[in-house]
Image (tube, rainbow, N blue to C red; front, side, top):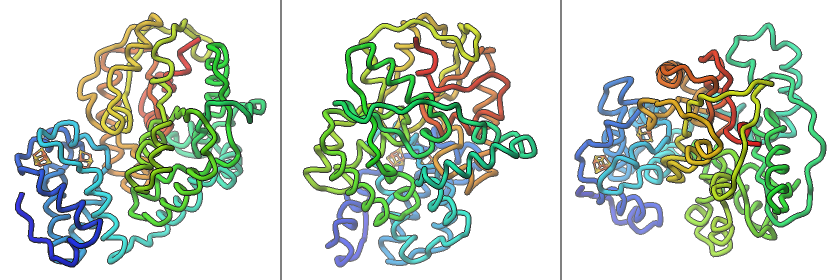
Length: 386
Ligand code: SF4
Ligand code: SF4
């Protein structure tokens, strides 16, 4: 793709990166085939190719406009387009640049976005709010019931060891038993996991909303405070994909070294054997696997969890359109409820088509998002392993 970005923009790191990405796009449109928002809306500007043109336009004119805001806000940052693109266009990074420009010139100061950014990355605030919500859970719409269920009590997790278990802001509040279970799985295999009170939000939420400075601040904190672990293991693929990206975002050697230590939990457990574990007191056999976008498109870890579950003895039911996002996408389901709802209905239909007894996924966002759309339990895949 030809570009005409002004010299002063090209002189910046952001301008150079954007120009290099834009020049790899051959505007073939193949990416539209795996874009969930294009599938729902059928509008070129709600597909990756159209959004690339909108970002190019902002860079060339130096002006952010309302059209770009609308269509970039509708993008899930699922990166399904990257998986299909034959030219290796780094759309996710380009969208990040587009959002930074929008945030500088046409900032979204909506109350909901501000509320999300002040609550979700702060477990100290989120936890009492969830506990409060659990008291009135029965009065709320079904979609909040999973999020607001009374969390089981778990004992303190080890605070010393060699493998840092990333707790995640939402996961540690909503499903604290998962991290406790993983500690048992790792210890039984001779590893010494620990959690750290110094962990802060990975920064993914702020980064996706164009708040680069906020994202960089928490990233720098994590890099300097958590440097002592030999390995950093993430169970929420949404956190993992951001942690693995620290080297690129911060462009500093210590951030790169930090990122090199990050593993998704599937990478750590792939060579071990597991038995089956009851779900809600019941043995299950048929599992529908929902790979989060952050695992399959972001971390490119396709097939790993499926192999572990199959080796443990589960039967994986076929799922059509597994490349497409379920609509959760961090804060997206709250900020774009109509599109997120439609994508959820489509995903629920495909996941349940072959009558699984349980749906397994790898990210707390997908888990809580899908929960009210299906009549079978939605669990993290680790919960199926003994
Ligand atoms: S991003 Fe890739 S698939 Fe999409 S139009 Fe550009 S080159 Fe084609
Ligand atoms: S990131 Fe997802 S929603 Fe956004 S353009 Fe790419 S495929 Fe479409």
